[in-house]
Length: 380
Image: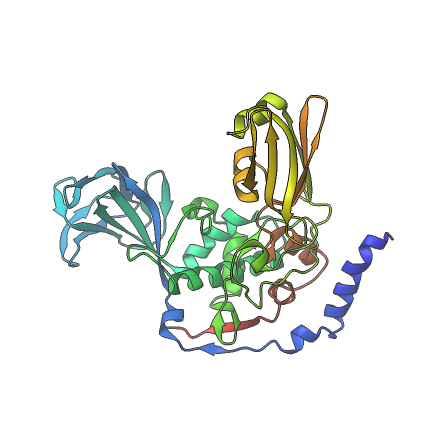
């Protein structure tokens, strides 16, 4: 047995034997805040486009913005929706906004995928926006399969379901746009419609229906990432505001595909990706988080020097995380890094390893969200 296995064995032993002090304070609460109990989400699928294809797998009702039925859409008939001045055009229908509502539990087609729920089409000054109005639990069927492999241990999928549900409701409660609550990208949570659903994602969502993580009775910002590279971060070291439940803890992602990684660049290649310094001569970390994630990097070239944020450098070089070092080589530079993502909250690969070792989703969640409580939403 390797010494590096001891922390894992200690954690598993602590949790399984009932000595885990954080689990002792696990309570089942009923949340009664109506804003937190919203069960339908507004997810932007396409935003500010010149047009897109829409349709329905079954006969669908077409309604205007006032909710009045203006027509019906044939099953499996794709139509092109376009902005029309201050409104939307769809075949013979014109309105400030249009709705497509499938009958008989049909699916809607938006762009290039099938989705559950209904479609709202509206026009803005930038173009056409399509918003999927979908039941929260049905939304999660897709998100879990898009954010994790459906073949992963069920307890890891269940932990992801609770985290994703909590994140979605937190964002809904703090939405800054009147048009939608979330979009379908990594800026929020990846959502790809029914194409990423599986029996296991249904099982994970159904087994945790309505469960969320809370702190002081409020749903938490349950952010997650692929892998931290050995230790998650305190939120204030990555973003700006401290949160008591997003504290750094040892991660259990060792040995996973993204625990360690390397990327090599020729001198000319890296110089083309970093502007303002000419040919890059050296790169030195100026500021890092306590766990080593780059906050700023000093880049020196033959025409000047500049300080670049870790986020900007990660994007410019296409790196998996900000937890990296840069070393010169004969050909250019080698970047050695660990982890994938921002390193806050739930580690997905950590959840995978802990679930594979027999921990439950409850135990995984209260470990990565320190001091948070598993709670049950009041059904509507």
